[in-house]
Length: 348
Image 1 (spheres, rainbow, N blue to C red):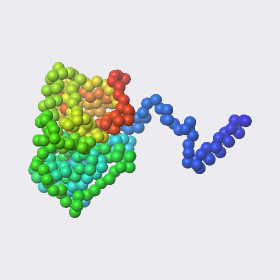
Image 2 (image 1 turned 90 degrees about the vertical axis):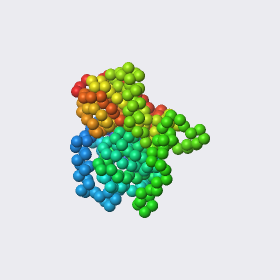
Image 3 (image 1 turned 135 degrees about the vertical axis):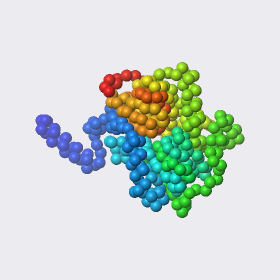
Image 4 (image 1 turned 120 degrees about the horizontal axis):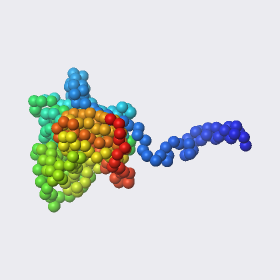
């Protein structure tokens, strides 16, 4: 058979495959890729740029009339939706006197308050949000927002919506009559019940997520700094995970959260891993080097480190405190969690 005959026969064969809606494995690129394809890019969303856009949204969208949530989602420049392939983050604003009606959905969410103070009600529990506090709204929990203060509330939202959508498992429900939910517990009841290091021995907690609806920043930061001192204040920083107080596991089945401190002039170890992460700057100024490129950041900024990108953080001005949201729990049950520590970063 000549090369021309073989090519003609192959063309006819592949045409029949297309008609049958099948493909030859040996023609599909990447089926035996030695490493993940880096199809997302690092990016920094700066509070100095986005906060004014969020405040301008007040003139565009009335809360309760035009929208139930006044939020700006961060889309990775390579994606139509999603900050990473599994996570979406963004800023949300509630003005004094405003309320955002209750709803619930299968995607999980976290809130990290950056400005002001107010309440998120989670399954009947009013949770007071103050700067740096981590508030959970696990899957299918009713939640609404109420603001009786004097300063606009702005917080970082983090959700697993891209992952849940990818599993065709996103469902949502509005609270009856579009109202706020009924308050059935005392303010911060879960914090008082579960945050003392003592757990009820006669209570069965069947949920997969943490029973705590809030992790106060004052307590978390104090614990982090004490741990940092006990470790000899390493120049590479110290990092703690927010955990389920009953199990020691992640706060939510699909999301893990961390708090880290990096002393001024310090530099973290270079690493990369299969999970993606969103970092929010609670204190200090610095930069990250991600795949050899420099990304500067300041207080209230947040940035994404996509999957399998080498990165390190550097504290340029003041001790840096970073909050981190990761999709790591998605990888663990399937043996897909992989990490590397070490160099190969030159540029910047």
